[in-house]
Length: 188
Image (cartoon, rainbow, N blue to C red; front, side, top):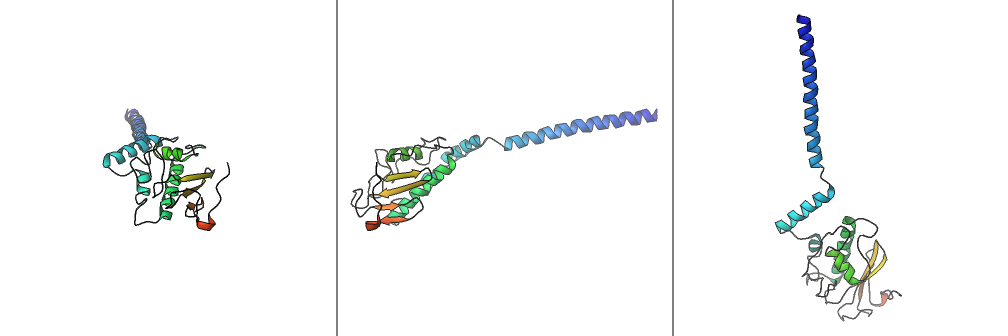
């Protein structure tokens, strides 16, 4: 009788241990799945928290000194290139946003991109009332797209006239040109 009672106790202990192990694994796996929210849901939660906390949008942070008297026009074009490289890192795919005319670049920053990510809101020093990205003198910037990752940005300069000697151009690799060294306008 003692042998049967010992076997029954052992069986109950094993079965109970097995169910306890399954219960613990279920709780552990549920916790892991909660921590592994889909990336888009996590981004949406983070974006909502940013907006509620009053923190600036990514584009506003990158372009916070845009057209400031304490910075140079080169700094403006560098910041503009930086904001687009960040947008491209965040918005994946073959065509993350339209890259043609100025207004398409502005629209991409304001949420018209594949991920609907808002990087910038009007009013901002780099935006005019017509939905264009402008230089510190208020002239629309010119974007020359060589390919998705190589974009040249040109400012009309203080005379506010594009394709003149006082223009400033930032090449896609970060080099700046002005005056005599300016590249010729792209042929269409």
